[in-house]
Length: 496
Ligand code: NAP
Image 1 (cartoon, rainbow, N blue to C red):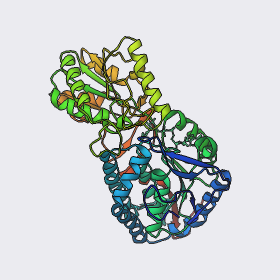
Image 2: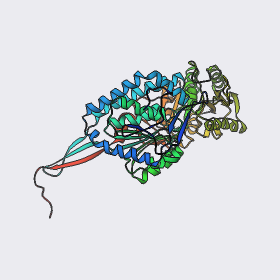
Image 3: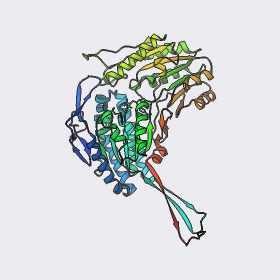
Image 4: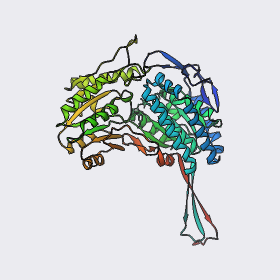
């Protein structure tokens, strides 16, 4: 087992049935630090037999856990929070090494994970059923709320700690067992770290199982395992559709949180300074690799030039470089293929007629060859059909699209297959509300930017951004099912 929470601990083991064990195959996956481009850890590449063992352990352990008193489940989650807090510096460091997360990203991740687990700790006491009278004489109805059974969690690499925590902690809190498959780029902070946290918290064996391995190799077995009752997936729409179909074959419940192409609308009467503060954070935090970051700036023509100039100034003022530098705001993109895709979007958008105002290049630093750091990039004269605007770019790119009236702004914002998040800056709050109402997304923030996530408020997307929801009551619904029991207290009269 890993002897610490540090990146140089031995993470080369799966966690199945409460044991740290080698995978059935000797194959491993290398974890590369996106800042230094060096290998910093090795984890096992699980095969189907490892996946089967994980589900077997989960199914075996689950019923006893479901019967545990709510206070016992709550206490384990609280102890996991304590472990998280007491190792917060190590975990921030792990996020820098594995995900290229800046200090801001790492600290925010720990704080949000604490909030997510704190909210989950309230679920054992909130899990309540219902009672109803009957139209049949002498009968009464009891509706119990029970855990689903085994919950599959598949998470992406961009905010691995939070996107695993938001499913793992509520699943365990509500009496389920979990099989967790993290992304290949972040197998520790999205996966093996959870095994360590919950092991330290005293979670009984079998309730949390972590299998690291490529989605292309074990994903179908994970998503379609016969023992899986819920598939909680966060990732791209393309993979999500495939996972949903696989889980659907098995009639498992699905929670699919997928991609986004989020608009930041700025009206003619908006406070441009405030809109730019929002825009800078919403476009560039964690290098724009946030599902709810600003993908498109949709700005009224009267303030367009002022907005573009101010955004360029702010983009150029940001500290850019290695995630290991304390003041870095914009660190590296997760890997080479993602970086190349970002640069390609920029190049093709310029070819299509946009103006590159700043950025658009990688930044070399401290002897790192072939750096993954992409400079904060602002593109003007963009139309909504250009590559950086019509695709979900997942990088520090700010395409600015002009509009002339509110109907056009709403049409541009909604001209995407996605419906995840958005934001509006408007001087008149009524206009802001009107635009927010008309944006076809699961979440809109007025006079702010779209990156908001609070564990007590429902988080969901619509259209190609997913089905189901996280946080609050939404996750409780998803991870539990109802069971109707009726009680016939006196002999019933049947018609024959
Ligand atoms: P991804 O490529 O879709 O991968 C997500 C997860 O699915 C990874 O663990 C991946 O494993 C796994 N996977 C791949 N193929 C699979 C298969 N056939 N069966 C089962 N699992 C499979 O997404 P990503 O690139 O990691 O993350 C970025 C995407 O996530 C963006 O589109 C972003 O918008 C979205 N996202 C959405 C939300 C939200 O709340 N709506 C939040 C964050 C991110 P491997 O890594 O091994 O391939």
